[in-house]
Image (cartoon, rainbow, N blue to C red; front, side):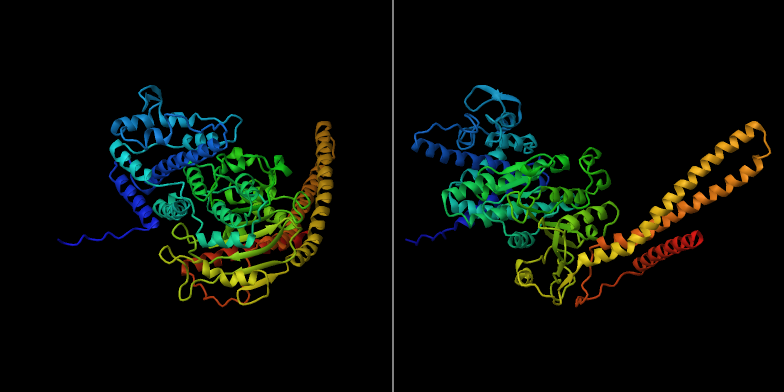
Length: 590
């Protein structure tokens, strides 16, 4: 008799990996799904409902043990156990149950379809799990059109035990991998995915503490909040600690329905039972309406690069700081949302923010925003990342800003992370690793200048620029006053000329001559005012260009194409010509 073939026992990770892989293979057969951007949301809402049902079973059992009444978030026959965990409903009947506003329910009665029912859920007093479920499903559509394939997916997911700590931990890692794959599939249409090493580094150095409030106002799929939850979870020692983590530690904002769902699922998988994520636009509140009760201890975020906001949003910001550049609007929001010193925080709130290179060098409105940042906040560190960290979404180099509300900026430390050895930049296939932050982490609390770290005495530079610019601004103010007087004299001469013409006196010719001369004086004073203001501004505002290069850079020189060099030269020559014209006008006015 031949020996039985031994079946190799799979680990939990292998089993779950196979379940997810099989589910995705099944979904590839459905003609209603065209790619990962369609498949992952379906897999997410299916897992979301299974997770909720397992969670509610646990809470029901606990309530029964404590002889308490339990109010489920989802009632029969809409619970997972009523329609998904049992055989029966499949094919067209399953699709109709999910999609139609009114349909035949699993119990044979007529009622609202599943998605319609879930969208209509409402908490007794607002702010409970029913509101979260309703918000999640408001922006969702079931895109699978084959009910038999969907039933196969549901049966696969039904074998996952969300009440098992080991399975949830493994599934959370698998889910993060799927999120990365979805971003890669999205290409240019996807959100920028913040690489896990960057997230880990930012959370590590910002060091959130249990009892502090942590916010990501543009949380996407929840990467920063998840990492913060992991860090805070390590500090939990008592039941009260765990309660604080669940109820008063983590907050997010995400306006797009799909990332909102992903963030909810991501945090659920990492042990946060009721993620407090606002589904509205974080920029929709006027800055002046944000008070102490709305402020937080820690902000960790990667706001959208290069996006534009509708005009209605701009009215929420000061008139001189309104811009369509989303990243600059978020920077103002972040500044406003940080706790002030003495308002529940000795040194005030602190923030770590990802920004593109353009934010450091941008002028105009961006310059005024950065002026406010350094004058009222302590921008103590800028970590400069090499190219390709955000590949394949963009090759634009990014920077990490670290600031707090302990006072105005004195010195800014820069730390430049070098590109990988032997390469100019990171790529999708060879991404950045957390270990490559090791030198920066070692330097962080024992700061000394080295080949990759340098200190800029910012307050000294600002004071020097202000002192040099002030005489020109004073001259501009004086020129304006003389110009105003000259303009009033011009208006008086105009009136005199009109009266002389009306009276047909012999003063008409003389008054016309004086009027012409006075008009020239007004123009000269206005030109002097303009040129002096420009000279002062040209000294002062460049200070807020924070795009500082490493003075001892050992990095390879970046060679530009001939076309790029020509464009740079033409741009600089144009600036030189404009400056020469200003100087010539100044000399004429003296």
